[in-house]
Image 1 (cartoon, one colour):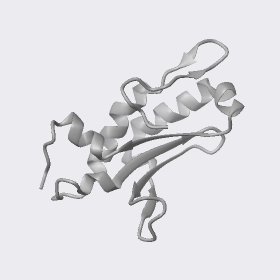
Image 2 (image 1 turned 30 degrees about the vertical axis):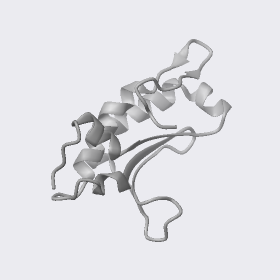
Image 3 (image 1 turned 45 degrees about the vertical axis):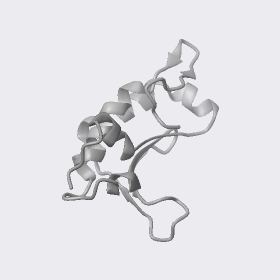
Length: 123
């Protein structure tokens, strides 16, 4: 699931689970992982993905899943310590609800950076 401004909420026993708090930290991480300088649309090929549930991971994907030249690199804790702490805390707090449907993947794409920055580019 992507994290649009009106993201869907997962229902837990207590209340809906809001994924919105992840959006800004994920966009900040993505911004830090983008090459510089870059062309205006090069950011579109970059995603940051968080897998919640039993096996938590944060990855930086370049290219689409179906392209043979796509790459996936695990984001280490030293690259985004605050985001990792946030993910672990969230995963523990909502473990029961997350386990109901298996795993969940949140992602932001580089195109969101251009929208957020009003179409500005670094290259």
